[in-house]
Every structure is written in C-alpha cells, then in structure tokens.
Image (cartoon, rainbow, N blue to C red; front, side, top):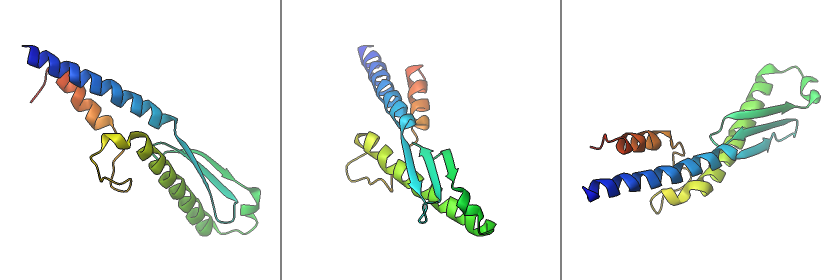
Amino acid sequence: MGDHADRKAGYARTEKGLREQQRRMAEIRATAESDDELISATVGGYGELVELRLDPRVFRTPDSTGLAQAITKTVQRAAELAHEEGFGVISDLFPAGVTAEEADLRLGPVLHELDRRIAGGER
C-alpha cells in the first residue's frame, strides 16, 4: 500500500514542479524586429502573438503581400527567441542531448496524465 501512496506523492511533487515551470513559461516575452526595424512583434512563451507594432512608414509603399511576409517573418523570429528562452527554463525536464529545436515545450499533456494518475487512474 505504501508503494502506491509513495508513487502518488511522487506524481504530485512532479505535477507541482511542472506547474511552476508552466507558470514561468507563461511569463516569457520575446520581441523581434523586422530587418528594416519598421515592424516589432512580441510573443509569449508558447509563440503566441502578444503585441504587434507597425511603424506608420510601412504604409508609404502599398505592398500588402510584402507587409504580410515581413510581419510573418518577424513573428516567427520572435517565436524562435521565445522557444529558445523557454527551453532554457525547462531544459532540465528533457533527457540529456535533447536540443531546443527537438523539444516540445507544451506541458499540458504531461500535466493531464499526471492529474489522471494522481486521481488513481494509473496504468
């Protein structure tokens, strides 16, 4: 019986640690600028767009396709920076040798499984 209780306590400790890491990931903000510095994009720890700033000068040359591409490239660059920062926050959760490029930083599925196991739904 103690083995089961110890395992549940271990899951609970792991869950607490993961939730703290998840909180830290939610605090991440990464900003990138376009090459011409007319576009600035800030994303959160999971790459979600938090802020987009467009310098009014971007409208001097009416090129919606070019503007869209520049915005997309800037947001992607910011997301890459956020991913690198996020990996630094939770890299200790991954096996040795895993790189930022390989790592999936979303902790939701792991937390869902731990919640299930803590509730008694172990495999």
